[in-house]
Structures are given as C-alpha cells and as structure tokens.
Image (cartoon, rainbow, N blue to C red; front, side):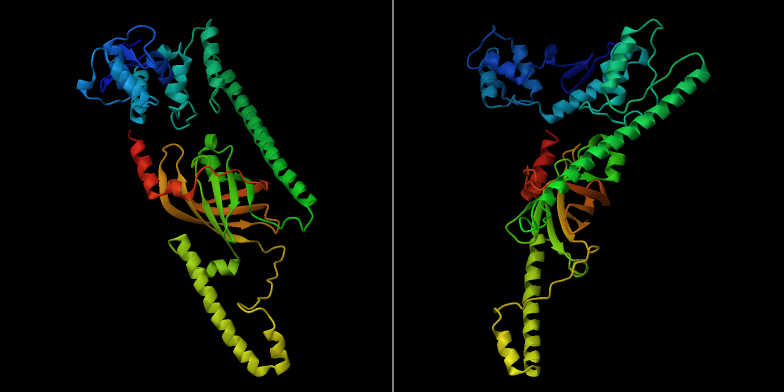
Length: 434
C-alpha cells in the first residue's frame, strides 16, 4: 500500500485516519468534557493534544491566552460550546483528503478493506448510495481459495441498496448466462417490491376512505386538511434513494379558504410552507398572479367591493321594472353583498388550488427564498386525492405529482414560511462554508 499521506491546511490523512499537527486525532466532544470539566481528570494532557483538539474543532484563539499546557483555555472553550460540533469546512476537508488517499490504491490493494471499496465506488460522504459516483463495473480480484475476504465484500455490498452483482469465471458462456438470468431475476424482484410498496400505500388510502365514510354527512364536511402520501415519477426516476417516503401535510389557517402546507419531496427535504387558495377553474384562469401572496388577497377584496357596487347598480335597474310588493319583499333580505346562486358542481368538476412554495435542497442545504408557483387539482368532492404541478427551485419546473390522503390529521409542521426567508438563506449560505 502507498504510504503517501495527504497533507493540507495543517491536517494529515492516511489509512482512514485524520490527524491535526503532531499526529493528534480528534476526541469526541463528550469525552473532552469528561476529561476537562468540571475539573481535570485522567492525568495532565500535553500541549500538543490541546492544540490538536482546538485545530480539529476549528477554534481560533489568541496565543497569549494559551498558557502552560492549555488546560485553562480548553476548559473555557468547552464551556462556551465551541467543541460541540466539527465545523462543516473541516468535515468536508477530511472527506476530500480521505478520497484522495483512496485514489492511490488499486483494486487489489483495496480488496482487504470492503469499507474503503464502498466509500471509493458506491456511497457518498454520508454513507448513502450514489449511483453517479461509479458508472462502470468494478472488479475486485481475490485468490480462488479466499472465502473470508470475498465474503466480507459481499456483506458490505448487501448493506448498500442498488449495488451490482459481478459474475466471474473461466467459461464466458456460463458467466454471460448467469448474469443474464440474474438480471431477469433481479428485475422480477424489483417489480414485486414496487408492487408490494404500492399495495401498502394504497391500503393506507383505502383505510382512510373507509373511516371517512363511517362519519355521518353532518359530522364533517370535506376538507383538504390532512396528511398525504406523494408519488412523483420525475423525482423517483432521478433520485430513487431519496423518494421512498415523500409526504405532504395541509393545515388550516384563521383565514377562510387559505391553507398552509409542509411537504417533503426527498431531494428537497425540508420544503415547508405551501400556501393554498381555493378557486374554480374559470376563476383561477382569470385571476392575476401577483408577486406577493398578501397583495393578491388585497386585490380580491377590491374586486369584492367592485362587485358590490355593480350588484347595487343592477338592483336599482331591477327596482324600476318589478312591482312594489316584490321590492318590499326583497328589502327584507340582509344588507351587504347579494347572495349568489349556488354553483352546481358535477362529479366531473374538480376543485383547483393555487400554490406558492419555498424550498431547501436536501443535499446542499441551499434555501430558495423566492416563492415558486404551482397548482393542485382534487379529483373528487371528497377531497381525498389530487394531482399537482409545481416549480421547485434547484430541481425543475413543471414537476407533476399525485397525492393520496391517509389521515385527516396532518403532521405537525416543523418550520414556517419565515424559515425560508432571505435572512435564512444568508445564514444557510454562510454555514455551508464554516
């Protein structure tokens, strides 16, 4: 194996280990606190040890504050919480240096370290499958009598979903037949797995529908409020490892006809706060899209006032044409906006909602504070399922998805609309480089 350490910014990396100056490895925060707080235990640490820990945790200090072996400074730093977490830029540096060191190793040198094989070819820095990392078949050579090391690699591969199975042998036809048969078998297994998953999700939706039918009609009117499971072909196709549990939860607000929602589309994990407004098809098509959601509400109020004026003018015209006894009967109605005729909603007519959303990318933590637009359309009067089309910043425009309700009680929202503001974007941007 190579013995060329990767050295950068005062750190050294080799054989999966990450050292500060003087070959000091990082000690976890809880162990450091038990060593130094409330009083020093386990002997007197060396100056190199203290300086190394401060370097691992990215703690800046004035050299004049470092007295003796640094015990007093270390206590002060621990009490201030400066060693609770490794800064992101140091964690990323460690990962980059480790990957550079692995690049020096051949497949034969990697054969005895299955965890390094997975890190180099199969998984990302967080240990999750990364299909884009390796686009070719990787061959790891083992002696014919090596069962233990080959078994270790098989176990490591089984712990990672969607890895490839490699067939080796001296007979080309036999190897090709085995690989072909395996591919067909694997495809059948994947189809069966997908069918089982869909049946499980569909059963949750059917269970909700059955429970909803048990309620009397007067007990609860249909409402979009609830918890939904989401399916999206585009996200499932491009990010299969992040799209297994996409959800959306719609909550009520004090404003009639206005809803808020939080949703998790996997690749945009942590997307929160979608604002919804119910409209009918013709009304929605004529509605003006303003830049701010609140401005839109103000415009609707102005439209209501204009409608009131128009209706009053129409009433004056009608008063000239109808007999006096009919006018008196009409005057007994409550004052204000005239009652409109109920709109007949057929089985084929669906409710359409206008959507505004902000999002955060899961992998990068990037916040997009500018609201994006979209629509959702419920498929029936029970408001138990809908299809949607939304723009998600950093992902794509016009993403189609469908959702099925599995509970009338939405999950508690974790964040609010303000968590995706310009200020939140700036904080997240700075944190990514710390």
